[in-house]
Length: 117
Image 1 (cartoon, rainbow, N blue to C red):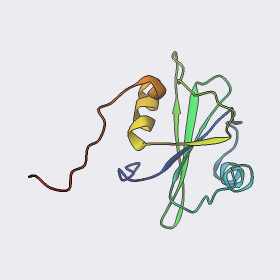
Image 2: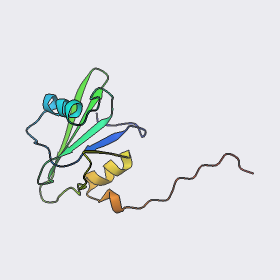
Image 3: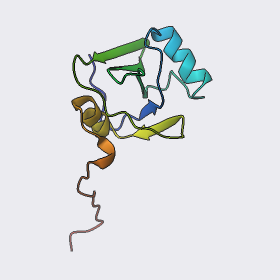
Image 4: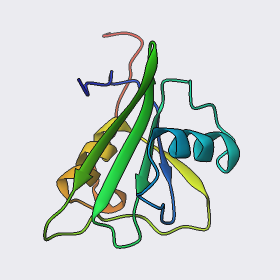
């Protein structure tokens, strides 16, 4: 089941990825091109050139999981950047999967206090 914890790190592999790649190809891409640990438990998110397919790769205790969403009419609002990988929040990933451009969604700032009085 795809139910990551709220503190799970999410990394977008920017640019386009060949969606013919499955678990082995994507995990080698994470380790080789992105220079990250595919066994970390983090979510690694990939998008195709046409921005109609997203794949999410992650390690879950004893094996890799691969989740995919394929749009029939719309496009994912995939960010453009010079960077190869960018970290986003889990809620931003949810927004991306719902079709919103998470870069322009503004939420209330999180406040933290040390005392009530």
